[in-house]
Length: 239
Image 1 (cartoon, rainbow, N blue to C red):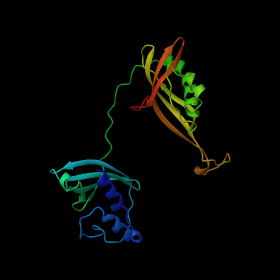
Image 2: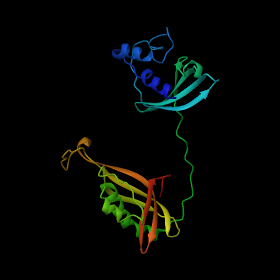
Image 3: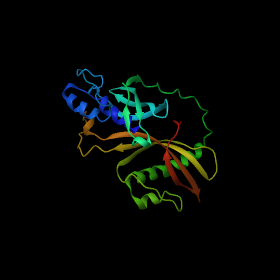
Image 4: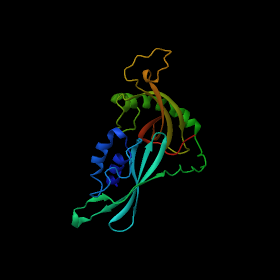
């Protein structure tokens, strides 16, 4: 699949100025004595990014059609690449065995509704100041400060200043005991790259931004306080 993705990176990016370079690069993927531009007439231009292997359909032991996902401007699409594999006896080599085909990418899946969990709003209110302190230190990289919010015997890496804490937007706490898996929506401040914005600036490159993200945390109550035992990426949208 990596072979098809590398091929797609050359095949899907063309313009007349780079035609000679493209043909030289394509030669590494194509059979001998084939069209050096592999079906392109040398006019027009196309650009693709975010090229990733997507699927493989084996037609027999040596032949397969590999699907590669890519992005071109605002559109997500697929490239279907027929590939021949020589096998172990012939040196485990690959070659593009026919013309590719561009196809529309599948539409996003429909997300089914799920029942809202029973929540413990009183504990959420109790947890909020602890979590605000935790996320502030988690962003800053202050090891001793972060440790104050962690459960006994636990340690966690931090962002080390890559972001700074802006807001704890939402906390969802299920009903349960002294150990809970909760979800939190956090707003991070994103550095502005050292620019010094004026209060009325309209240049988005000159100001810091905000980034909203969701997390799952395991929290434990020790004594009369809650402490963080673990943090992971969030799952389904919460709230």
